[in-house]
Picture 1: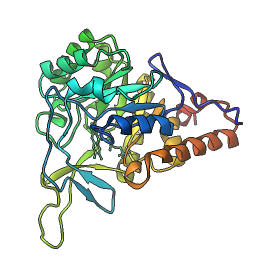
Picture 2 (picture 1 turned 90 degrees about the vertical axis):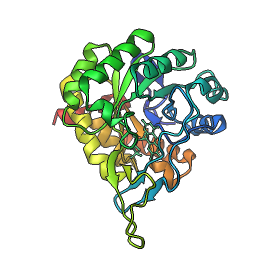
Picture 3 (picture 1 turned 180 degrees about the horizontal axis):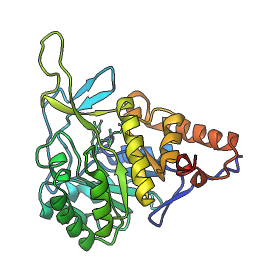
Picture 4 (picture 1 turned 45 degrees about the vertical axis):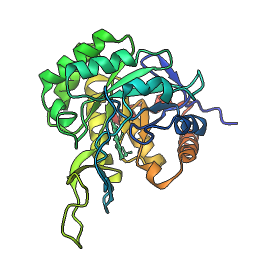
Length: 303
Ligand SMILES: Cc1cc2nc3c(=O)[nH]c(=O)nc-3n(C[C@H](O)[C@H](O)[C@H](O)COP(=O)(O)O)c2cc1C
């Protein structure tokens, strides 16, 4: 058995390893969440939950492009009141991040109140969905509005609050102000607004026209943002975006991420394949003389 430890801590919460199921890959099925926990993830993020259930957009909602995956699901979700049911099949020791979305301060406050359950470990505010009007990037582009939401959630909840960032020119300024408001960490990053056109019909493929780009194309952008946030603030960061193999994982952690989100990888492989990422990270650490994954964090800054 390997002597290398993959254990990490996120804002006082101990995780058995740094791999986190990214938001949006399991939405309304308690059995699938339980399967993901059994598969070996260190923590699971729920689909972003709004105060009321949302149906989302009509198909097509996903397009496969040469650069990655384009989705405009439209934040379809069963609503935050469904949280006890969603988490009902998870064992007590599982670690859960609840993602909250909304379009008003009260929406987020309500989400935070409803997430105040014993088996919820972290609240993640989705301020960066790129394809739903007034629910994502429209919020994060407005720093003072984002801070109002953060204020409301931090004062409502005792749980650590993380902000899911998207690509903006001002994200470092938001990070600094969010930390002053009591935010504990950041999930970097959401998908990036993009468009694909069908060459037969010459129309946009997605019913919503625009979608969010995920997968390998966004990975270097996410690594850049993780690197910059860590360099400035050394706060807990969950690096998400284009993790397809162990090299992407190692890059995120060396850039400063404490944990790594796994999303589009699951378009290609069953959830049990997280084991391959876990084993490959372990092997990298062993081969390079690291006794634990924490020692790899941020090493790219020391070179
Ligand atoms: C189909 C789909 C649904 C998603 N839903 C959410 C969501 O509800 N909330 C959220 O914060 N991010 C959502 N995301 C973004 C992912 O959590 C992740 O940030 C993004 O896909 C980049 O990671 P990846 O390249 O590993 O997929 C979604 C992504 C996809 C592809």
